[in-house]
Length: 139
Image 1: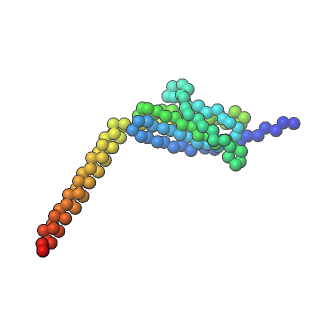
Image 2 (image 1 turned 180 degrees about the vertical axis):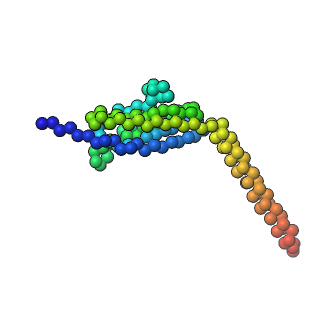
Image 3 (image 1 turned 60 degrees about the vertical axis):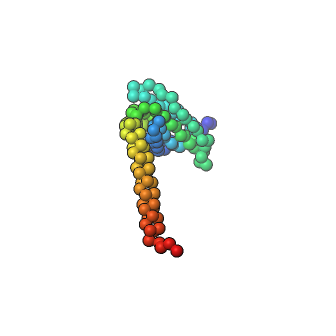
């Protein structure tokens, strides 16, 4: 007698990180046995990804973290996970678009405003000290 067991993979949790040079999409999930994970592009072509398996949880489930990184401001990908033992097929499409130039301009504007605020605060302190020195009589 042979016993085969499995556990359906949980609904993948998505995280998205956008910075000035890249966009990262990450899915995390748990299940058993080890799944087949792929990322598909806009035209269903296989994309390279970074897949990490962090061993097994206390319950013996695999913890999967899969990351797709893009260097462009528009991402149209699909995360797929297949648990062959239980015929579980998860497909999670992700479409993201952001204006890279706007992000860069916002950073420049924030730096500029920070410098202006620093100069204003410094000027106010300087005027307050100057006014205080005028009001203090010399001995």
